[in-house]
Image (cartoon, rainbow, N blue to C red):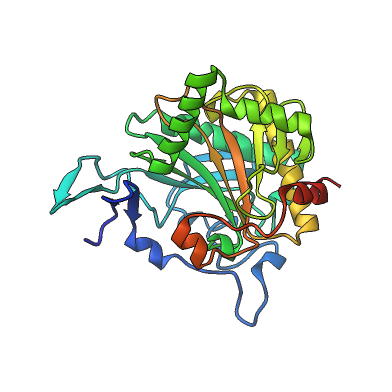
Length: 332
């Protein structure tokens, strides 16, 4: 089966996406002769740079900077998608197993026309446009009733899984909700049933009172390192107001979110020497968007360590540094 499809692990109940075409993605982290592409403003072989529009296969959304004609962010369909809107969501049996076509949508957010730009060093306005782009595509993708979840994420650096240097994020709409997300929702539901409160709001309230793991806060958001952070410098950016769904974010909150994201990534850029990292916006699955126990947040995980045998075999992370020390280092 060479086409994209999804299989259910019968033992763990986790869905696995198979996308053979993604093995053909280009890698451009180093040019011939060893010159790193991140050091140049425009690359001749980069499909995301201006003037390469014929390589994009169509533009879904384009936002300008300063209300001018030139674009600042673009959204395109991923040329090597994990999922495709041309499939369907009908399950079928394969012996004792369950499979389904690889239905979904996979988009790329080109964050800047500059090949060597970085969120950590962009202007506030440029980061706000990225957040606005996320928001508009999120709302659009959730209009499809087959989209059970929309995941917005950024892979920065080769160790984080990025295949192109040019600054970009990705958005994937899936027809299924992963088991680990269901588990988190169920735990939040149990807490709400017991205490009548959102577990995320309680965590945020405690962290603001404790202060030892807080990195920064503004009017709408708090950035902190979780008490049980799985990796060094793992950071959560969480809205102060209870919101289950990223799509509920207001215009002032978009600006505050952009400021906090830029601040945290800027701290990591300066103090951790621009580490490879992944970030993802964890938001409610469909039908959970108005639930009182779910709270969206942005999770940033620097790639400073590599999981080894114990972590893989046990599922338990070993973090060689303390969250309180990590927070103090970034905060100060």
